[in-house]
Image (tube, rainbow, N blue to C red; front, side, top):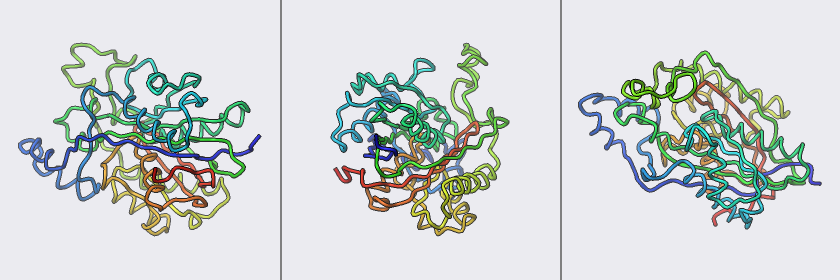
Length: 339
């Protein structure tokens, strides 16, 4: 049995409906006329893409998964497990991963969801890697990050600036080379209600009153302190490096949650790494939450910034808050680039 786990292929999907910052400027012209100009500079986001209103998060996930499987020449029926990271699920229950399994035609795959927002993909990747260690029969696992928060938001709420749709996927396989490495996690539930959908679960089932009050849509009730990411991301990055026995300068490319470019710049400075070692995609597709890290991974591979031999570090930070980081070395198992 091959002793390690590596990425065989990646895939991604971005829908076609572009929502530019000019659209938002017109939308909020009377309520928040200066908001877009202010946030555009700090975030680096000038546009985002939305799926048709008839779609659900699973529709994005399936398209990214299909591309990853196609690149590896793997049929859906060969997949053993699907691990889906999202905080914009199709339903409260059942899990979105089981919907993806059916739509994809992955008839023998087991499934489960990981729901820690933008930390979901590193968490799912680490968890899926662990499954290989305890299940010798397991050969192929799809790890997906998908996001469609715009459908769960109030379009007149300025925090909807950040909600672009998208999905990214990675196919994990057994390998002779060490691909997926050790991970690190942080959390602070004291901030759980600061950015949330407060009504619709067991704490507060949805009622006519809660719907009218807007508690069934996602809202930022309190801004997270900048230190959450500016201190948290370096802390996670250092833990990942220490647990894997490498120095931070050894990292070829870093991928952080794609929400604010200025934050990434500050974190890279704190880590004493050049900004050239940070891969960003918010300029292309905006912020895509649970999907942004796998989308950035796919883009880094597509553009040649990451290739077999590259040491990558991915750190995600999501509402709750949850933070997760993982190191990954791309191996010679990687196929399908540019197809």
